[in-house]
Length: 197
Ligand code: GDP
Image (tube, rainbow, N blue to C red):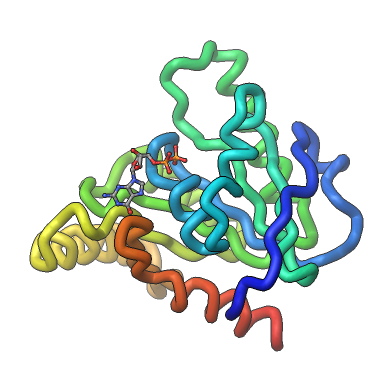
């Protein structure tokens, strides 16, 4: 997919206030620092795009961008903020849950995972919950350039094994590096493929 245009639309704390244009939506989520902003910038080819949602006050909001005037890319807040108060964390969790469960336009939720780390409890719990709720999702491993090919495939195998303990089928899986721009075509073609069906 060629990215012809990518523009910020709106930031929101409530799913009811999200755009009502009915465009298909692809959302990105992960723990803070997983490389979400870098990935969004890499995918759209707009260096500063995800900076819009990185501005103070916006990292904990649902941020909509419109791509090629055809679909929405949604930058969701990171989960697992240790620094937030319990109330803050609960509020954020509710916002994410409401969006994920209620947003009819959501076509696929991309869950970002740091390729360097072994399966983390918080990510596994989130993925499990998505499965239970039948939310369509895919896994995106980030920062693949930071480890050797051998270590990368070992970590990804470990993830697959953990997931296959509970499920018969694996979700779509992408390996990316924003640094080396790997995985870009695969991800964009996946989105394009769904949009064209
Ligand atoms: P976010 O908090 O999830 O939005 O994460 P950022 O995109 O801000 O990235 C967090 C840190 O990881 C930054 O220092 C980035 O430069 C670094 N980073 C993100 N993606 C990559 C990548 O693909 N490769 C490498 N080597 N570093 C990355």
